[in-house]
Image 1 (cartoon, rainbow, N blue to C red):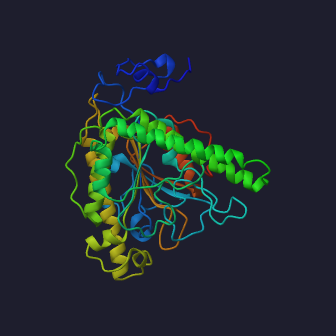
Image 2: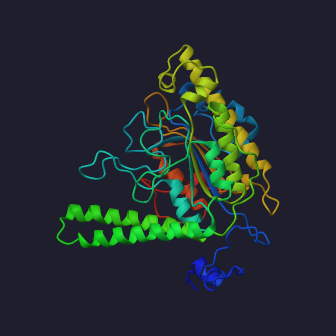
Image 3: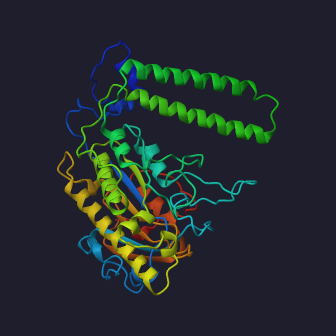
Length: 428
């Protein structure tokens, strides 16, 4: 049976809270709560870490003549030595339509053609993390979580790394303290008031929808298309309201870490965001996470006086040394995150690393170059072949990598962005 039941029909149909078994025959999904009983198989998760400006091409990429498992880590990747068997470095990929040398994130996970919509100079499509959210985020409190740095530079337009199915930006959060409270702090308002707020929002949506329907008659095709997009936006809001209502009476997970200190910047900010990422995955609060990492503040925390933009325009000298220091710091932080994922146990005795697909990289390779996007893959969540250096043919669509990841997570989509197929060398 493919019938899908809304959880509210079960739990609020008689005004009582009734614990029900997982009815697999009707597609019932168990929701995380204090009442959960026997552990099920750990869920698949995804994490995408975007660094904005690229890397120091002379010292970050491994030697292209050393491929497979028998390769030497580059100077920029040396801090990852203890995890060399757990990472795959991919060379040769690019987003074929990219033409903005300061936009390291806008099209990184979408592979979209910026000029695909006539009359617009900026169009995008759904990002890989939001595809994961659509397929794996129905049973978690948050379908996805988007994290931002306290200061942006080198990432380009967008509100986070995430873009929805209409190619519209998905909002992100840049304050670790607020992220902590969003994930773990109890709601201040009583249940009845939160229910009333959702009902009021629905009433507003209904009124707006009715008015839009009224003016729909006698519109030009262009206006009709705009109105269709408007209706989709209303449907998206309705979906979020339904999600909020599903979780109104389910207590938030107990925080596995202390509330962050306010005002953290740079390296310390990245570390606490990493801790929050692990905590969100550990408590199954979400299964799709992105993080646009800081540029300027990271360099400032490393006592570098140049801006992230100027460091990206390095030449032999102090700016190049600053670029190399940034690369090593990124590798140190990635190694730290892998350590934490491995150290965090699942209910079945495995660890988070085994069930998390993690990608680190940028749409920009170096300076203003948009070919050979720096890409590191790790984690067991996408069933990828790790522990190798993979050099693909020049300008292989980066979306081929994302498509391979999605398939490895059990998400059977035909294509993603400008993908032309999966990367067979990545499949375990």
